Length: 248
Image (cartoon, rainbow, N blue to C red):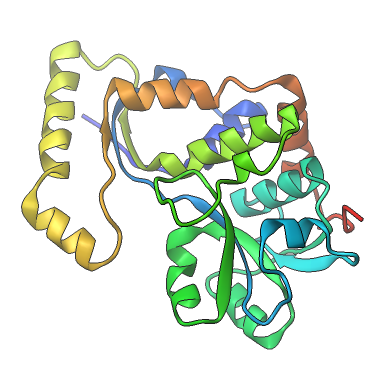
């Protein structure tokens, strides 16, 4: 009789065996996911960086913003800059739209974040997208196509799964099959409801639904990571302060 919706950051928590994790996402009764929200690499429109290649070839480290140490944004940024050897210095502690204000002030050059949270900023001419991680849009190069290192590709695939599984809904393990089927059917119909679709499209938050076993398969794939990726996650999630600049 209990269902819930929660953040995909729980995937990271289970991967590293975080203390307090009393669940196994593989055993949840997956009902569906409502949306996708791909990650993007965004830089200031005032910066000389026009492409991901430009960023990788910067001679001096540039400041990138993240939320607090240990957050999903912090973990993704710090691991990506390390596996890609990017010349980035992480500045943590930016919450809400603090990072956008900091970019306007010139305190930071860029960030890695959800596309939806930065789309309007870019549309207003203040920022520039230079790469995307996941999602179905075709207007940006996928970061996975810009790298060759196997470890980097494995972690990028994990980040892709985080964006592709936005707005998860699940029940506890062991829901009887007929009742789980009823929940999934109701969810499928809700995600196709014309009134809901009209509202989400108007809000520029379109529905990109998956139901049942399709979600379970993606969760399983996200939890199957090589030991090296898990170790990098552990290091990033246990950090007490932002790391020094990486890269050139």
